Image 1 (cartoon, rainbow over the protein chains, first blue to last red):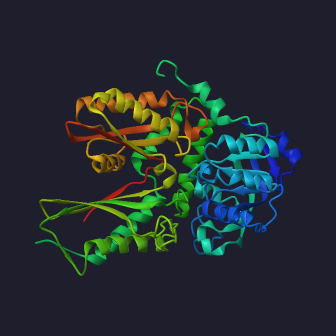
Image 2 (image 1 turned 30 degrees about the horizontal axis):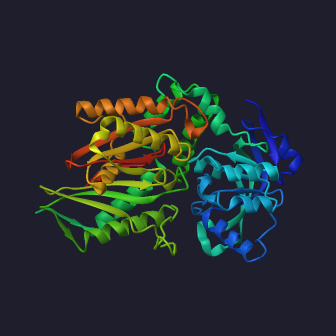
Length: 187
Length: 280
């Protein structure tokens, strides 16, 4: 299977080339954020305050890593369920966010916002925390340190394996692939 | 009268928390290898390979398989002739969890209040279920439960007239909605009968039953087989990206119930389905 190498930040032009079903390896800087960090960013936007960083063309990875063992920079770091971030996602996409990495399906509202903002959604293998940890080369907390595992981290990844599951046109691998394997005798 | 000191309990529980999170159990390994052998989807095969590779890395580096090291659920079977020395059993079990999550560099995922949501810092409290039995044994079963899958679980109070068909329909709908988010191929624990909380408890306990072991009642074994085949016909596949392996096993437990009711609970676990058991 052909694997596409991509480098962050991921500009609109590059995002539009990615199609649902593409297997990619991501290298460069990405940012971690999950439930509590999203809630805080949403509150900041509501109050007209700036976000902790400029998300234009950046990628957010939905993860709350384990603590690092001595000699390591981070613990196991696999994806969490993206759907819980759905309520906050469109406002971040409107701020220029280019992509998200997580697991599981997204709401129609998120998909519509992705289409209008030319954003892309990647999934990686849930639970593969040890394997994905190996792709992380540096870690720096940049905001909300008090949230512990839920703080926003700037991480550098190398050859981080993921699959494009929803592309900039809204093609959705969760829908298209399943249809190929439904056994109609049972349904 | 047999005596067990609390330090022994603390140490065992700590070790079990670390073991459950870093090592895949033999029954789950077998189930996943079988799934890899039968999977037809290209994405599915690659995803299962990644999962198997991840287990090896976790084992070698002695780090958690998954970053969601869960909220700890414990089933404790306590022999009534046994004496605990040096403190309370409940405190020892909770202290064991705190020790395991600290020493094992496991993620602390528990918040003290569901609304205020401040992290307790040591992954306690664990949710502990006790059963008192004759004899002097202490059996501890630990299931660190991740919430990617826990969140996809469901309970419904069906009517007696809904019968077997109603139960099948509810389980399959829960699997269909939940499995793409729950890290499929999943394990499905089902509790039918009892009261509301008894059904939920049976569903959780059913997840701890080794994969491939069936309910001893013939009609329940048949229900398990049906639910497994029907789930895998949904086409959802590993991580929801298509395939014929959506569910690795369905374990159903039943209990007497009221003339007016048919409670059914479905508890979903991811493909790791962490469970460790020890007898002290």
